[in-house]
Length: 163
Image (cartoon, rainbow, N blue to C red; front, side, top):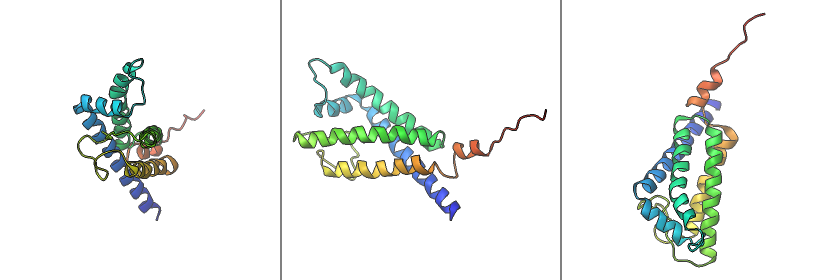
């Protein structure tokens, strides 16, 4: 049973990592489309803080890429999952803010591949992020599984030389 759980955690970790690498890649391929999505959320005052849109446009994808790559290889899996969890909470709060203010905005989360929530921001996006957050928190809680560099690091035991 323990082996099965470890393998399942490895699959969840790799899938979540691949998903966020893909999301980052889609944003980095077309930064203007992502910047338009950030502006559509109207979180930043564009008259006084347009530089934050530019910062978000480039910082968010690289945070997603780094966290996703760390999850893919299974290195610092818990830390990467914490970083993704924080991002997902921030994204979800942004989506809830758009819904509350009844803005007409699209997510831009995965570029043109907005499965399973196509179109404008909706409760579907909140549910999708909640499901992804649950998977990330599972990795934070249980670790990255049996397969990955974290598992390899745990097996290396450095014993001090005898006195």
